[in-house]
Amino acid sequence: IAATVFTFYFSFVQFRFFKHSIELVKGDYADPNDAGEVSHFQALATALSGTVGLGNIAGVAVAVGIGGPGATFWMILAGLLGMASKFTECTLGVKYRNEYEDGTVSGGPMYYNSKGFKELGLPGGKFLAVLFSIFCILGAFGGGNMFQANQAHAQISGIFGDYPGWITGLVFAAVVFAVIVGGIKSIARVTEKIVPFMAAIYVGSALLILLMNFSALPAAISAIIGGAFAPTAVAGGAVGALIQGFKRAAFSNEAGIGTAPMAHGAAKTNEPVREGLVAMLGPVVDTIIVCTMSALSLIMTGVWDVCDSDGISLTAEAFETALPGFGAYLLTVCVFVFAISTMLSFPYYGTKCFSFIFGARRDYLYKWFYILTIPLGATATLGTVVGIFDGAYALMAFPTMISALLLSPAVVK
Image 1 (tube, rainbow, N blue to C red):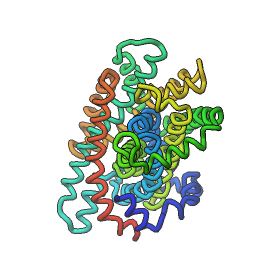
Image 2 (spheres, one colour; image 1 turned 60 degrees about the vertical axis):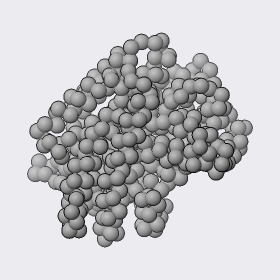
Image 3 (cartoon, rainbow, N blue to C red; image 1 turned 30 degrees about the vertical axis):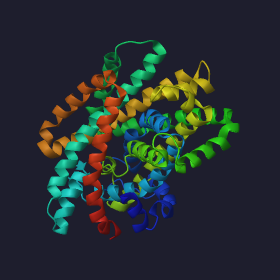
């Protein structure tokens, strides 16, 4: 609802300023002397590293497996509308961020909740800020590391044979620890290199599958559109498809969830709207492009309707069906890189929220706990992990969108 309101309130900003967004992320208007810690591109790459993860591979498989092909339609629509949400929340993330004497900055819903409400003379801003921080800490554990480790282990063990999940978890934990100890600048340096690579390799692989099954494209499009509105569609009819599409889109692009403003809040800029325009490119990449490629791979190969697998295993079936003897290995490479990228950005989000509540001097406690929960995620069941991050993400959206709706006139100004 909020995404639809923002789309009309800002007169379809996601379409009117799309070209300018590309110019901004290229650095055409960048000033290295502006406050902030990372470039526009690095901020976008960091945010994308959190959103372009296994939610785009395994999450889409969950959506299509439960909601049918029609879930894809609603997922794309949610991505288009979500661009307006990203624009709004990330503009606010920069406008109300804290800038410190040492050059570091902190932005996010916790700051525009507390500062924005005070500016409007409204009570409850601090309460919503703390509430968001608590839910974000939980969401970072569930979606940021446990889901990634869980589905990565499912794919890797499927290739190399069954072995204890905690081994996969320890490997990921070691890699993540080596990067996050350097803070946002270290994370940004890594993500700006691996995000373009991982997006290219996965989209390229999906395109190859689509080309090999090109004759099935008209039927796939018909199934997507028909399933989106058919009253007899899978799992609850059209409503079931809509729910699954929007749930997985929210997990995929996190528009309106509140995580992206923390990454984009670190950008070097003195113009908040500039970063809002850069941020709205996120849903284009992770939902409209990557998630759609995943969904079409599942639908065009037919595995969504004939396999008993779920999550990453269903996507592996699609890759192996199209590329026998090679597809599963290619997907495993994608899975490893996607999982690592997401695990790198979420400790930054969680640390910012933890520091907001308990102070920056104690943020090391959160980082250690985040690292230690990665092996737990690799050994948990998929249903348990999905339940954790679905609940946390839904709860994060409430304080984020309440304040964004109230503060949207500030974005207009």
